[in-house]
Length: 582
Image (cartoon, rainbow, N blue to C red):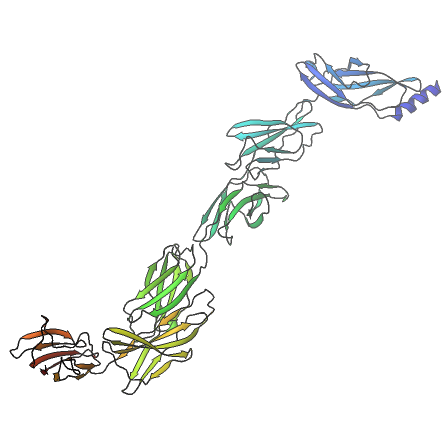
C-alpha cells in the first residue's frame, strides 16, 4: 500500500495540472466550456469530469462526463443561472497501473468584454484610402476587432473580422474628399465586444498658391484623437504622387506657407501629424496636387540698341525678351548720366518678343542714357536692361576742312567693333551717301578735307555709325546711328546773258547754281511786252527756247526772273535780260 501511494504521488507530480481555457457566457441558455488538451504519458485516459456552480456561495456539481480525450469543448445546456458561476475539470488517467485524478484550475464564466481601446492613428493613403492602426488589446483572449466609420452620430460597422492591428478602408471612406472618423472595438473569443472607443479623425488638406508672391499656401483640419495632443506637423512635397517625398518644413498650427519651390512643376503635398510624447506615431493627410505657376523672379530683357532714326532727330530703342514671358509693361528710363536716369514713358507688353520705343523730341544737344525695366502683372520687376546711349555728333566747319566729333557708344556685351563715317549730299534730288572712313572703336573724331557740293537743304551732312563687335552672346549684330550734322554756305549763282538754241554751244538757258536747292530754285521767262511765256521752270532743267505750245520762240531779247533757294535756307531773287539767237 505504501508503494502504491508513493507511485501515485510521483505520477501526479510528474505532469502539470489541466488548464481551463474559457467559459463563454450563455447564448440561448448555453454556456460553452473550453479547456486545453492535457499533456501526459500515462497508460490510459479514462474520462474528463466537468464541474460547475451557479455562484460563489453554491457548491460545485458534476454536470458532464466526457470520455473522448480529444474533445476539448462542452456545451452546458440550460445554463442561464450559471452566468455568475465558475467551472473546473477533473481528468482521470491510469498511470503506472493506478487510477489517478488531475484537477484543473477554476475559472469564472466570461461575461466581461475587453477594455475600451482607441486607434493609434488614422491616416489617408495616396488615393484617399483610410489606414487605421492600433496596438493589440491587452486582454488575453482577443478574437478580432470591429472597425467603425463615424458620420455625425452614426457609427457604422465596416468590418468585424480583423484579427491583426491594421485595416485599410478603400470602399467606405475617402480621405481625399473630407476628413474621416474611425473607431475600433476589440472582441474576445466568447463574443464579448468592448464598448466603442473614441474616434480618431484624419486631416483634410487644402492648397492654393500666390502667383505674385511665388508661394504655396497649405491649410488643413486638425488631427483629432490623441489624448496627449500633437507635437507638430511636418509638411512634405514630391514630384511623384506615391514616393520620394521631401520634407519642406514644420508647423505648430494648421497652416503653412511653402516658399522656394520649383516653378512650372507638378507637385504633390501632404501633411504628417506627429503625436506628442511618441514621435513614432504619426498620421498623414490626403495628398494634393498643384502645378506651380509663379512669376519668374528674373526674365531675359536685352536692349539691343539705342540709335537715331536715320536722317531724323528721333531716337529709337530696340529690346528683346524671350517667348512665353510674363511681362505686362516696360518702363523707359532716361538721363544725362548713367546715375541720373528717371522714368520718361511706359510701353505695354504683349506676347511678342521684340519691342521698340521712339522718342520724338529728344534734345540732340546732349548724350542721353537709356535703360528698360520690365514688370509683371504683380508689379514685380522681372528684367532690367543694361544702360545704352545715343551717339551725339558735332561738326566744326571752316572753308578748308570739316572736323567731326562724337562720343563712344556703350551697352553692347561685346562692345563696339568700330565706327563708320558717312557724308551725305544731294544733286538734282538724288541723295548720295559716301563712306568716308572706317575708324577704330577708340576713335571719336574725323576730319574731312575734301570739298564737295550739295544742291538741297540741309546741305552737306555727316553721320557716324557704330558697329557692334562679333560674338554677341544673344546672337545679335547691331548698328547705332548718330544724329546728322550738316553745314551749308551761301549759294553761288552764274547766269548767262545769251544762248543759241540752234547752235552747237550754249543751246540752253541754264543758270548755274552751287549750294542751292535745284528742285526749289525756279525761273520764269517774259517777252518784250512783259508777258510770261515760260513759268516756274526748275533751274536744273533750263530753257531750250521752245514755248509751251511747242513752237520756237523767235530770236530777240527776253527777260527772266530767277528765285534761288540756298541750302542755307536763304532765298535770293535775280532778274535781267537774256538774248536768244537763231
